[in-house]
Image (cartoon, rainbow, N blue to C red):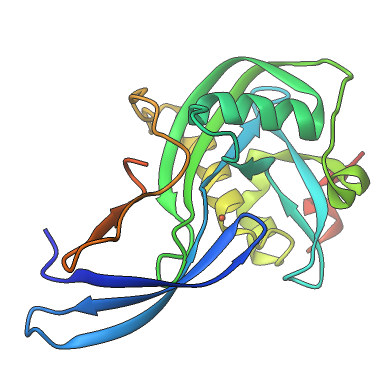
Length: 223
């Protein structure tokens, strides 16, 4: 249990699905400190396997990076009450038109815990079927392309700075470890609600998201 606690939370801005708040935290010495937090509903990412050693990635424009990014399919948990595994299934269908026979939970992690509450659920999609029915949402998804990436090429893609998306690096390495037998995956947990649970209306408040973001030879093959 942390010796820090949140004493108050002040809304600063709401923009789309994001809320920005100013948190007043109290440390173990009772000193007060202000921190600015970006509140995010959480997200999922999925590694769809086309074969035992090849995954399907997407390449899409990310305005924060100023260019296109190679990454695994991913999306926000923006449907209230939807379990993460169902969000993963839905995002896979929307972005690449794939339906998995099995979704294996690989990991859960905070994307940017220094300032953002985005909590990621990472899955491996096995025995995927191409439905031919993509339903992209937004201009970036409509313009995205796909790329076949061999799992053995991940390190070289990272070294060549072709793969610079953190969630995708984590997801691909864990997918390879799972398929190689060195990672057992996560147990299927009780579905978590989508939105943050906030108890921000007392002088000693708290919040929780857990109960509630090279060389030609190594280049991915773009479709």
